[in-house]
Length: 439
Image 1 (cartoon, rainbow, N blue to C red):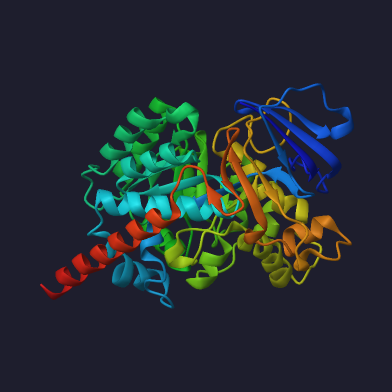
Image 2 (spheres, one colour; image 1 turned 30 degrees about the horizontal axis):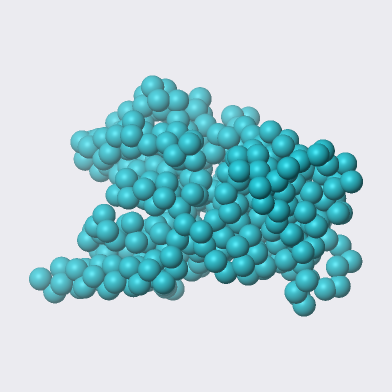
């Protein structure tokens, strides 16, 4: 399929530029899943398109990467609100998750994917259970994802690692490489050293990244010091994890030494500002991390602690939190923020040709309307993009050269059916959990 996207403003994206570059009167040419040209329309080569998309003056930009979430938790939206993390998990979440089924996870995955596509997310990084069902949802929807089975181990049985390895063997690089698999030990506090050592061995064997919650709360931080005599990052380093790509979610309670360790080893921070605020976990020192050279990406976390998958809210909040907590309005620029939401995430997922709009890169892109009232006047497009744009401004979402969402319509998902199934499975899930509580 050969597609021309014309009549657009375009940002090719941000890698390490100080400012977001923009190109007026631009054009993007796509052949199959790759971009063959992205630049000034006047300089575009001759191209016979099968389809021409009129951007109607919208902004074309790389698709967003939601770098930490638990997509099937859409079925648990709003459960346990206003509880601290430890109580939220043990009193509200775990008792319900114990009654998840394959059907429930598939329904929740479809619903979450539909929500992400609507808001311009083209790829996501996930850790959960019943992951065959989520992989099938990604495959069928056309989405791109890095998936891992969340490994928990309290008794040194290490049995929970087996589904994670099976997931790698079945799904890694599946669906035309839209699906990649990670190893996903839950956290320092929810695993034994024995299973973590086996995770490290499996990472070496299968050459996959490691996705793990790190220093999410002060309880996590203090507990690790008490149990190990080390902070969570120091513990991971002692185990040899830093020899492999580490994708570390939250990273709220970091010492200066932890920051230096991440900067030196290339470990990636998956920043979740809204979830961390809702659960009163704290505010990650992102400005200090960026200054030290740490790789930072953005995620929503699951909707039970957010309560949505609209990454634009995280985009706006990421720099604002840092400005407010440091009392310095110059920290965390729009360019750093957009890089965290696009290119940095794509690279962290292991794709070398993703996260920018340029020749030879995968055609994962979105069109963002710029003619809504909240986008006028536009004295500074960089500022408008980070602080004014809304998820509802996304009018087209494309993954691998295929349009998956356009102007309220989905090409691979039936919204009425997805919502009906999710409602049914959520009701059944809560009924099972309630029955178990009364038994």
